Length: 50
Image (cartoon, rainbow, N blue to C red; front, side, top):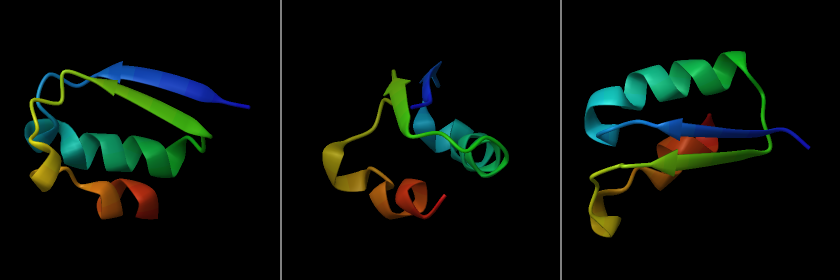
């Protein structure tokens, strides 16, 4: 199992970088800290697709 953790300090700003990284680094679990994101606006579909 591959696990990664990333302190993104605003997922809105870093989402393109996170998605690119996920495409290049297949992992099983990604833990994201400091998303500064409301639950209703969290990009679940984008992250799941990556």
